[in-house]
Every structure is written in C-alpha cells, then in structure tokens.
Image (cartoon, rainbow, N blue to C red):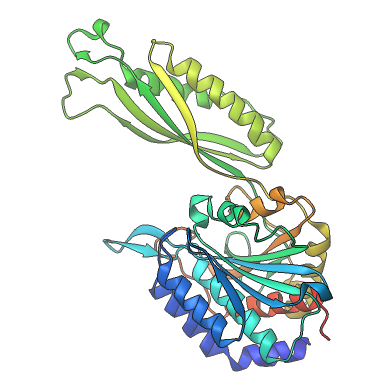
Length: 380
C-alpha cells in the first residue's frame, strides 16, 4: 500500500503542516497539556476512534481494531513543551519536537483510515504527557495501558549533527540519564572567625573535585558533572551554612549507570563531609537506556527503505540524550519497542529555544510510521 500512502500524504501536505503549526503555537508544559488533550480527543472523535482519558493526568489513548484478530501494537507520541526564555520572553516552547511527533502520529492514523486500511489486530494510539520530567511514561505504565502490547512504535526528530534531512534510522539508542539533587548543611560564622563555622562552599569544591576523579571504563560512554550550585546569601562576610547542588549523570547503558551512581554516592558523601558538613544526595529524575528490539527494528528498517530508498536508511544513532519511552521496554521485557530516528535538518539542536527544522520531513515520518504499521498488522 506504499503507493496509496504516498499519494495520500502528498494530497494532505498543507493540512499536516497546519496541524503542526497549531500545536506549535499552543504549546503547554508537562502535566498541563489540557488544551492539547482536548484537541487530540477532538481529532480522534472525527476519525471515529474511541479513546480513553485519565483523571490524574493529561494522557490520551485511542483504540482502533480488535485484539482478538491479531497482535496489539502501540504508536506513541509525547505531548509536552519546555518552559524557556525565547527572544526575551518566558513561554512554553516546543523545542524538542513533540508538536511534530503528535502531528505525525495523528496523521499516520488518518492516512491509514482514509486509504481503507483495516487492521488485523488492535492499534493503541498513545499520546503521553510529561516526557520532559521523565515521569510521563511511568504514569501510563501505572495505568497498565501497555500490559497487553506486543509491539510499540515511536518517532523522534534528530538534530542535523546525527541524521540529515531525507534519512531515517530504525532505532535511537538513547543512553541512561539520572538527575541528582544534593543538599549540604554546615554552621554559620563570621568571616573573621572561620574556625567556628563549617563552610558549605568548601564542601562544594571538594565534591566537584571528587566527581572529576571518578574513573569508569573509557570504552563505554559515561559522565557526571555538577550543573547547579546555590550557596550563601548577600553578606560576603558570613560563612554560609546551607547549599544546594545538582548533578547530571549520563551512561551508555543501564549497567554502567548503576555502577556510576554507586561511585557518585560514595564520592559525594565522603568528599562533601570531610569538613564535618552533612551531605544528602537524592535522585530527582531518571531515564533508562534503550534496549535493542531486533524484530521491530528489522520491520522499521524495511519500511524506511520502501519510503526513502536504500540510501535513505542510516544506522541508529547512539546518543547520551535521555527519553522516557524506554521505560516501556524495561517494564515489559517481552515488548518489541523501537523509536524511529527521523532526519529533519534540525538546527541548531534539540532544546535550543530557536530550534527549527524542515517541515517536509513530517511527510516522511507519516509515511514510515504508516508503512510500518501495515507490516505489523496486515490489512484484511
């Protein structure tokens, strides 16, 4: 049905872009995607697709087909935007491409419905909130939305440094990410009598040095760095007694992340308390690394070749960026899950407040997702 998909997408090029522009202009931050949810529900209603919403978060799940007739597959998009300073104004801003992801997932279903595709199985259309917090996928998992799922398909725009426009990969091998919050408590004293106090700034210096001294296997990507420090007040002649700090931790796989976190905990507590300060360190958020799902990656690879040609297929990028999509696979080990990496000409990079990309790539995404679903659920 690739001919029918290509024709439909070409006919709907402008409508696809208009939907993207609507979602981009009405961005909403994590857990507050209220108008986005209403819009998506309205679109599903127009398609005659039943859907489920939730009392405690803004996610939406549509249902098309019958699980008694074949496998159950999911097609997932994230929904939330970032809160960013853009051209001097703080706004909700879709600088990670979630507006594009919603557009492509929505138009994949529209395309398949309108070209007469009848799935032998069940398609769950998952619009997931709060990916940027690392907690959105977990919220869906708690609702058991994916407990009966055989396959899960996602898609993500890739920066030009990874994949150029007109190319795509059958997976994205995101790394594991953990964000740590730390607190240090010391004793205030006058700057003239430092021996009567415990200076938390000294602890911060020791912690940074200790983190930089951690050694890991150099053949596997891993890093830990202090990314936030708050200490002291307005008085420069006072020994500060309280500090907060943040640590960004990255690792290529989940095993290395576990090892690195153990070393960080030991290094931070030991170094930070050498002057008798009290140090605590707790995780704020985490994302697991991608795990390979060979079967569905092979199916996506074939779909990419059919849409973009042999030259349009590129290997999966290995990136230290995090993505909560991968919690689905670790929660359901038998699930075949992958995320398409879509080349879009995206510059200067994801999460940049002025990120932009070639909107023609939306058509490629719809085609790849549509062809993949057809391969997973053969039409009647």
